[in-house]
Amino acid sequence: MSEVYDKLMRCYESVRAKTDFHPEIAIVLGSGLGDYAEHIQTKQVIDYHEIEDFPVSTVLGHAGRFVFGYVQDIPVVIMQGRVHYYEGYPMSDVVLPTRLMGLLGAKALLLTNASGGIQEGMQAGDLMLITDQISDFVPSPLVGPNLDGLGVRFPDMSHIYDELLQNAVRNAAKRLGISLKEGVYIQLTGPNYESPAEIRMCKAIGADAVGMSTACEAIAANHMGMKVCGISCISNLAAGISKRPLTHAEVQESADRVAPLFQKLVTESVLEISKVINA
Image (cartoon, rainbow, N blue to C red; front, side, top):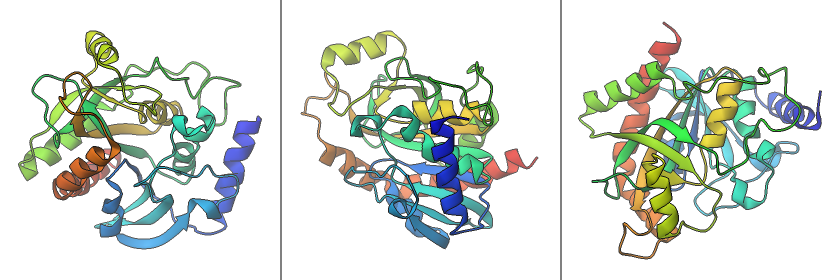
């Protein structure tokens, strides 16, 4: 069909040669959040280097492997470390892992990330349910020949983040007594952090949190019919709001601090999401 599709299928065949595991839910772990994968019932681990033609994460804190296993009795595939557009990969490579997890059987995708807080009242360590997104500042992963085997040429994006899955995460947070912010996530290219003027622009167009991932993956997943939800770990306040210089170390420190709450929320959310997609 196309070079992009052929590469995707080579990756799929490479993974299928190593495992016949069929996940129900796919989870992408963002910066500093990768430890969650250590707490599930692991069935199999496949390093990205073991997959033919697969893009490899180069960012500190991203382990770079798929973890197949169970959250309680629910089969999941966890992407322990993602690849980013700022690493120099074409956007088709950035979303290849998302598409691959869908081909492996995942019906729903739970995206997580570390992001900068823009919304009034946010603090480092907050968790935010993503209700919508802005992706205009990065290339669409759907540019180029349409992958007809995955989805239609002009997919609707009115409900990128599935309302029923949003409610599933809300219910999970409520049951655990976890305070959950809600808002719009905006993806910029990175790898530099934003200027104060850029953050003022993001706020003016409706963004509540800013990062360098996630939105493109949500588009690719939605295109191929996966149900999507997302949780942002607010790792720092964005430039011009924070009084301190922004550093990747701060991102990891905040993620480490919120890790116990995050892990509980992801586990409870997976249980709730499974109910929704199997209803």
